[in-house]
Image (cartoon, rainbow, N blue to C red; front, top):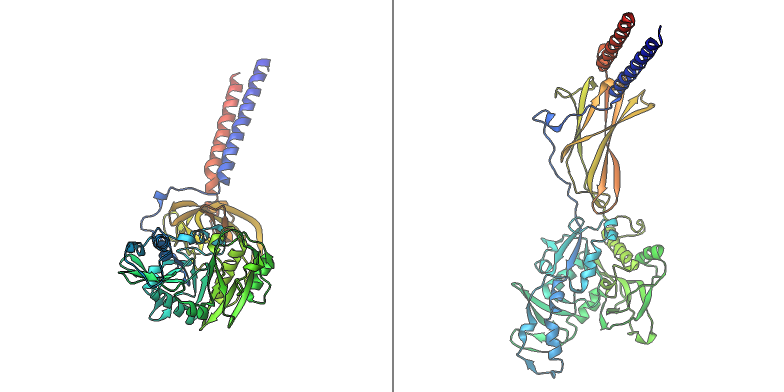
Length: 522
């Protein structure tokens, strides 16, 4: 054999090796592909998908938007107070009365930060979600009687911010709510100081804050509208308004259950940034437990009654009061978050000893229900034994924006894990992961190529991953498991290999024939 013939032969030999390697690689890749993908349009028509629904959560917490007090402070009542501050007792004012009769504003006023707190990460971790687990209402709703239905409380816990001005009907509804067993949490002092009248979108002063108004004239009158009543069922009254820093923090060293919970979480002597604003003092110690005493920097400022966070029993219910203008610093002071959360917990369950901050106060009853069905490739529903090409439909009863672990989340992915079951007690270690493809908002699809698995019993574990909206939380959970048997005939098992194996054999025959032909020709 000449040198040129040797080079040619070696060249043909290398070509054969490369061709065989490529064919083997293609065959191996074909055999190892874990899924056979189909476009959503290839689904059999007439498949019914479950609807988009969420289980309702019984809502027993309400937050009241203090629009009446916000209206009084919106260049209305206080403009009148300032202009006629020097009016002698017994004289009447018949001018500027429009300042005492104003269109209601839909605002939070001094309680803006309390509203913001309910949209914070802290509130989300406690599962206190406005519109989800907390009902948001305003004072017009309360004045209309929406705390009750046929005389029965609709809520267990009612949270108030700065409610300095209330209607008489509203005031009596709050009192009735507590008497019938509800828990009223008052976060801001200077509550229930003055009476107003609401009618057809307008709010007018009736009596309190040193004035009285009958619609035609106004005159100097009582400062506290319900002084004795407040002392009886609330436990105390408005003390004073001031600015600057007057408190160094709060002492929670009592035997009260809420005090215990706060002390475990943030300590006994708590330094806060609250300095002073509107303050209440505690006057009625009957059926009253102190949660914590606010520490006055200057002892000479002491009003004779303690400024305290406390719990006061009235009728079958409870009033829990911060004693201060808590809305001012609730976004910054952890103590106030713990105080509010522990108070809500007490109102919902009657105890706080079995709860640790910041465990969710309301557990979601929302659920994601799935319907999982395996179909043969031709669209017929598969029985307990499958073979050939199959697909598994996973239908959810909820799409996106599902409440999972106290966060709003989207369904990000669905996977299946094929696990071979040896017997009822043991499993083989081998498993294969199959990623599902999204079909539409309520349906995902797993394609199962049984040719890639040995005949036997299998369990299909299905898991879903949820990703938080606006928050980097990821929740993975097991949602379904199916058991079935793979039973392919021996000749069916050869089908996946037939095409690539035939191609390899044909290619090998062609190459060998071509090589021998060239060798003979040479």
